Image (tube, rainbow, N blue to C red; front, side, top):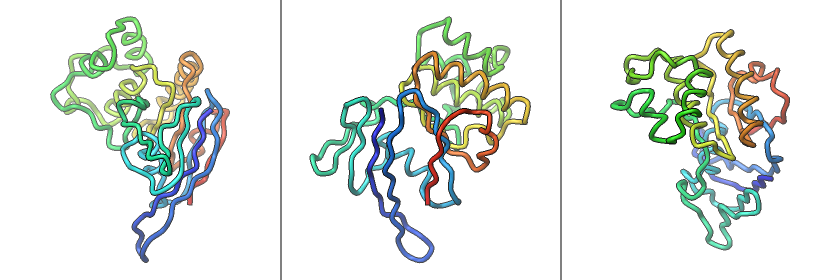
Length: 205
């Protein structure tokens, strides 16, 4: 179980808005996070990951307190260890596809399986600049999964993929999520792309 009860002031066009989120997420669930642009969906993911500090509240994951403003508890991202798919991919320019995954895990069988799912098995020696946008996005997803995270935070992870690739990948990812017991929070500007995913929805803003 992941329990979130946090708030954060956000700079807005007309001053300051306050992002407030209070929700429990069942272990192994998939939740679509929706809402208008600029309401704090990405900020929410970054607060859960420990990249941004909430102004108040608590984050508790599987009984471990990751953040508690009143108790001054704030675990580092390295201590939390979620898988994170950034909207801009955040790939290492000097690393090949293979090196990105080997940086996260030494499990060769798992790496090969991820490469097959992402249809990148013939691009293992390519650096990001020689990959298309869709290939870069798939690599970002595979890298996040390489550590077999118990919590996966995904920010617009399918925006650069065509309809067939997106459908195939989502189907494969659901199998992987279940296998490794991952809880997934997925920000999407197009919630319809996840219609085939059985899960919950959180509207922000």
